[in-house]
Amino acid sequence: MTFDIDTILQQAMDLDASDVHLVAGHPPMVRVHTKMEPFGDYPILEADDTLTMIEHMAGERQMERFDKIQDADFSYAVEGLGRFRVNAHMMRHGPGITMRSIKEDIPPLEALNLPEVVSKLTYLPRGLVLVTGATGSGKSTTLAAMIQEMNQRYHKHVITLEDPIEYAFKSELCVIEQRELGQDVPTFASGLKHALRQDPDIILVGEMRDLETTSAAITAAETGHLVLSTLHTNSAASTIERIVDMYPANQQNQIRSQLANTLQAVLSQQLFQRTDTPGMVPALEILISTPAVRNLIRESRTFEIPNVIETNRAMGMQALDNAISALYFNGQVSRDDAIAKAVNPEKLHKTLAA
Image: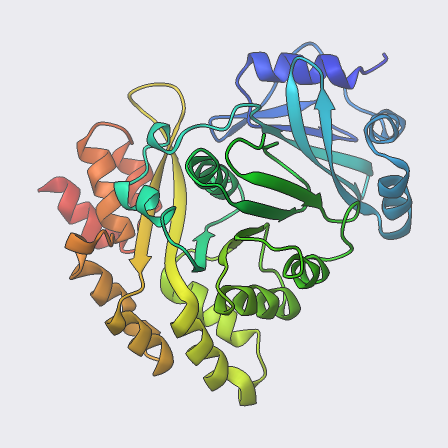
């Protein structure tokens, strides 16, 4: 049987799938609202089938990378259907492909069920805003919606550095330049270094994944730019510690001081399957940098950050478990899901039972 990748993707999108998995030794699989399931009347994929689809989607550079390191990230577009973030890789039984759907239309912030304070962050003139969470927690969508809100409000220059480009922006009031890792820039750090010479107001960095990128992002924020980026951390405190731990011990006091001066907010997201309607809904821990928070960062007392969040709700800060319990009492998530993803499951169990 011949596997047509565009047909597979069309069928997956008809099911409202977020991800498509094409793995040698298995039939095509999709993830729909967090659950993996087979679809269509497809037989098991052979290694040659998946390799043929990789060759169809990847460009020459991506295939060279795949042949060299057995892994490649790139984007793929189907006219009339949409764009997809693709990872092609090798595993025990042959090539595998993981594809994530990227919506053509950037959703407005108000459609994402995010707290109002997230919209207020788009008014910041400078500093560092981090959106964190596990893979698939909606970080890219939140950042895209924030950029789009600024695109409709300001006459500014926006540069994005992505791996790969996900949402395709159309310049409205802003001039938006999107650069893709591997095609337009060799590394995030290199792209950031040169972006500072391109007169940007706002810089989006796909991920602060190493010391060089992190250092360049913090420097950009220090020099008067608004920098937005992501990390794979699950709380504000762990985000700050992850950044500090990237640096050698003799530089950690300095980076704590720099981070205290530049950090504006940390949004830590988790996605939940909705129980009231098909789809997903986010729960966020929100840390806003206040003088007290900046002192905690400088003095290496990040373990106190959860208490600061709890006592500053009036400023828009929010503990994750409070956000989860609100979703439960609004009838949007199940009790089991809420407790399973809580920071303190026992405490939340008592709260939900009250």
